[in-house]
Length: 264
Ligand code: NI
Image (cartoon, rainbow, N blue to C red; front, side, top):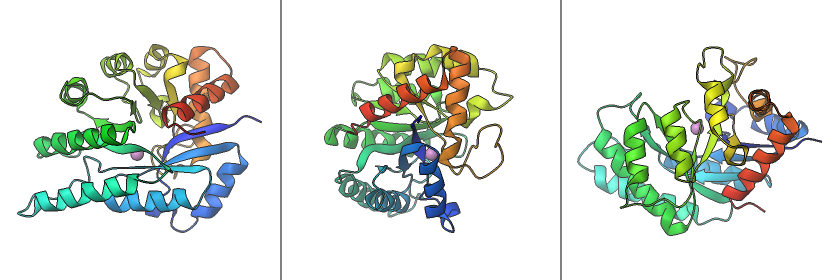
C-alpha cells in the first residue's frame, strides 16, 4: 500500500480538541504513516511535543512564528528571551526534528518588521547550534526572507519552505541554498496561476508534501477543516504536472522527509 508523509500539520490546534484521536486514527488507516506536528508559539510548541511524545508516528517542530512574537511593551525583551530559552529546552527531545515554523509575515503584520527579522535570525542561530533544519513561514516578504537566508552572518545548514509561496524567485533561490520545497493545498486551487511552473521548477528529490491542517484544505475539499488524509491530493497534483504516478510522488516525498528531518 502507498505510504504518505504529511510534513506539516497542526494537530496542536484547538480545532482538533474534540476529535483529535479519531481523526488521527482515520489518517493512519488511509496510509498517511508519518506526520510532523508544527509549533508556532511557545504554547503550541509545548503541545506539539506532547502530541509527538504520545504518538509513535508523529514528530514535532518547535518555534515562534512571526505572527506569535510577544507584544511590544516594556518587558518585551525579557519575555522574548524567556520564550526562546524554553523553545531551546523543548528542542532537546528526540522527537523534535526542526525549528519552526519561523520566518516573516508582512501580510498579517507590517508594523514590527524589525522585530520579526530579529526573532527569525535568533531562531536560525538556535537551529544551527542544535544542528536542526529550519521550517520557514514566509508571506508577502519574499525578498526580506531571501536576504536573511542568504546573509553570511547566519548561514543556514538545512531548510524547508513550508506551504511554499508559488513565487519562482523564492523557489529558485531556495533550491540554490539546498532547501526543500514543501507544497500544500494552494497548488490545487483553481486560481493558482503559477502552480504548474512552480512544481516543474523543483526536482522530485527536493519536494515535500503537506496539508497545514486544519487550514488550507486542497481541492476538492477546499473550505472544510483540513486533515492529513487530504495530503494525497497534493501528491496527485504533483504527479499530474510531472507526468509520473502518484506512487512515485508518495515514495520520493516520503524519503525526502525522512532525510531532511533525520527520521529512521
Ligand atoms: Ni503551518
